[in-house]
Amino acid sequence: MNLYALTIHEAHNLLKNREISSQELTKSVLDRVESVEPRVGAYITVAAETAMAQAEKADKAIAAGNITPLTGIPLAIKDLICTEGLRTTCASKILENFVPPYDAFVIKKLKKAGAVIVGKVNMDEFAMGSSTEYSGIKPTHNPWDLAYIPGGSSGGSAAAVAADMCLGALGSDTGGSIRQPASHSGVVGMKPTYGRVSRFGLVAFASSLDQIGPMTKDVTDCAVLLKAISGHDAGDSTSVPRDVPDYTTFLEEGLKGIKVGIPKEYDSLAGLDVEVAEAVKNAVKTIEGLGAECVEVSLPHTEYAVAAYYVIAPSEASSNLARYDGVKYGLRDKGKNDLIEMYRSTRSTGFGPEVKRRIIIGTYCLSSGYYDAYYRKASQVRTLIIEDFKRAFETCDVLLSPVAPTPAFKTGERTEDPLKMYLSDIFTLSANLAGIPGMSVPCGFSSQGLPIGLQIVGEHFNEGKMIKVAYNFEQATDFHKKKPVL
Amino acid sequence: MKITKEEVVHVADLARLDLDEESIDKFAGQIGNILEYVDMLNRVDTEGVSPTSHAIFLTNVFREDRIKEHLDRSKALANAPEKEDGNFVVPKVIG
Image (cartoon, rainbow over all chains, first blue to last red; front, side, top):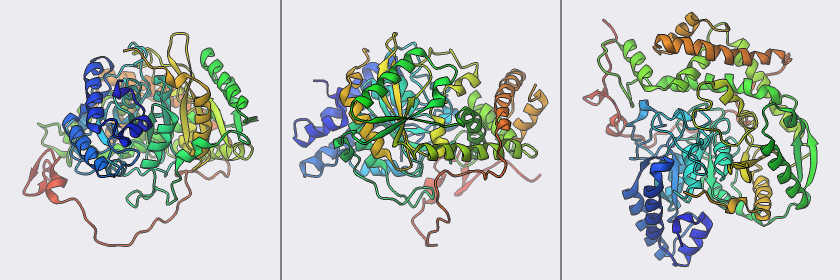
């Protein structure tokens, strides 16, 4: 048995029954990383030594009878979540040598639960991108076909989970950055409700949209990891003080009485791949066959979501990224004696092209004379998008749709056309604008063998219902059992 | 053209970014396309619609004003590109 291929809940049962140790499990994962990393390129930093030390500690805890569902479980962390003493680069030259002096709230929780941190995984620079090609460190390849992108921005997390280079991972999602790579890499990914998971220690991209979430091999693991990272944190004023349910209890419920909504506008969207449409249609049929009732719903402002998002997200980013000035941490471009010149050369050397593009768009949209036309207008359209969802959820429990309009695309195919890259976020970014949760579950493969994901979207704090639908679907299908050959 | 090369340079300047000739050309085209696309927002009637800046209803998150643990100076300075006597060092600001 290859221990690295286990899911979190399978490994937990073996650890609990003392059939394996965390050190054996962690060693197996580290060996796996060593053997496939040269081809996949998921990791920016592998923390082998500290991981083994954490595994040893976990084994002692287990021996003493202290085990949580994550004790001794090797996880990968997207490289924009701060880990004390472990380099956190945001895949940017500007933070290439940044070693955080503190742990993010979610890392504190994982450490307290006894999890093992294998290392930090690749992403688009500052999470800006949909392919991980905008990483300032290196590209990541899709484990299902190395010529294809793994999705992004949490492409390293998705590839690491798909290629068994960890048992589960954390990603972050600002416009689809967990769900789209999960869909492209054939894993389960969830963006929780905004405020469900603390953003303390998550390097900010667009603060009103960013949310940390789990990326896992199956839905059960998603429920386990979500519970472990959720909860109120006084360190994040946007974190919501609300009890965290045991999400695994939703795995036991059937789909009788559940109403799933199918947004009618999604059918007519340009660029929807036939194979994706077919896979999603079949998934809806399967879910209906399991006892759920399908209803048609309307989200009339769907076509404006990309436009609103690509004003709001870059605007917030341009403000958040002003902090990279070469003074307190990160890169400083030397040789300039004047303060302003130092800022300019540091930022110009440190940021990659996509980050610069978004900073410029955001600065433009917020600049005097344009603020009302762009930022205010987009924020008003955001209100209308939120109202669309509210109305839709009056007649259904969850919404079903594709995650991305196409399966993964080839490396290099879209880097020169940013607008085309942005348009592929159409199904995912509305959930961020509305602050509602969304997840991706494997629902098929293209004729080329690339994974396709089904998106399940719920109302605020209704992750449980989504997990219920996802789990029932997963158990009725075999997609999650397939693994890429590496 | 939705955004001129001069405007790109001006906005980059506001954001403290230097761009080479090639990037200016490329960005003017790419950002122009994006802004043209974004213009579709003008088709939406938003009369009387209040803008949303935060998707979850939370207001006035207060906490008690108490002294808590904080990063010690050496940790806070650990990542500084240049430091001296417990301070961040920056290039001369006033001539």
